[in-house]
Amino acid sequence: MSTVEDRLKAMGVELPQPVAPVANYVPFVRSGNLVHISGQISIAADGGIKGTVGVDVDLETAQKAARLCGVNLLAQMKAACDGDLERVVRVVKLGGFVQAGPDFIDIPKVINGCSDLMVEALGDKGRHARSAVGVYKLPLGFAVEVDAVVEII
Image (cartoon, rainbow, N blue to C red; front, side, top):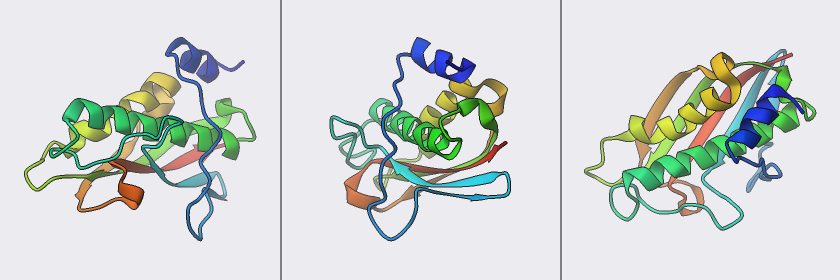
């Protein structure tokens, strides 16, 4: 078991099977040492977290949704690395999207749920550049979506 896997286990995080695409795209594309991971929604075995943040989803729940996105990103990273998360050199950038209500402005605080997980799981390799954007709607009504660019060996 890798150091990253040990950290995840200690945090009580079990990576799911990577989520299959819901449209005409692939879950990730590798170009050289960079892997571009398609947006991962706040889906989980129990259905995940749907809704509009600031309307029917509170900040704490939205942060959990972003963490779910991070778990799904890690599952895709693992697939891109042929099962070995130690091949991750660096999370280069995260792009976070929050289905936000008209008065909700704490978008960065929501995406911290994903950012914090990357650092907890990967250490300094998980520190990244980031964007955090509030949007009107996300696919299938999910509360949060996050995509990533990751350097691997």
